[in-house]
Length: 155
Image (cartoon, rainbow, N blue to C red; front, side, top):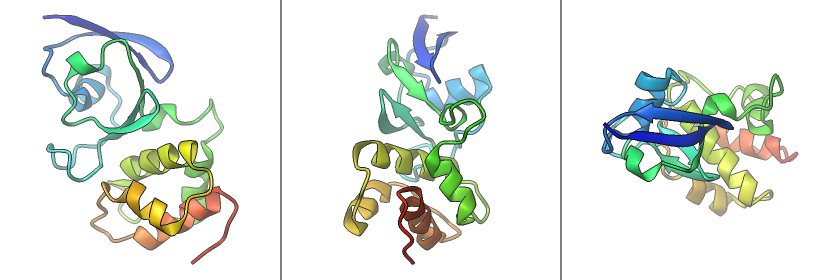
């Protein structure tokens, strides 16, 4: 089997896995980071969202051959040490999750949005978050958390 080296949450990581193994399974089953969730396995729900070179990316359909030499950030690597990322802080402040299963993907999508657009409009939030499904329907609280993270309080 080939070996793939990539930066995982800022640390060099090498795995010996098949080239077509999805990044999601490498993260969960090989490396042991279970914050990234399996939802659908076909890139439709967003639960498996990570950042690949800073871009929100679905990990369930991304083969390891496409990850070699790149930077991957998971929900576990979003915080700076003991300091939560501002979007994680906002999620807690507005009590965004209900069951919480999809929330790591939601948070990763929101963090990627704010990294490129620190003052998004409703339409820009809708576009950035459209690939993330929440079966509990906490979309209003998710939007409120995004606004909270940028210092705006909106319903």
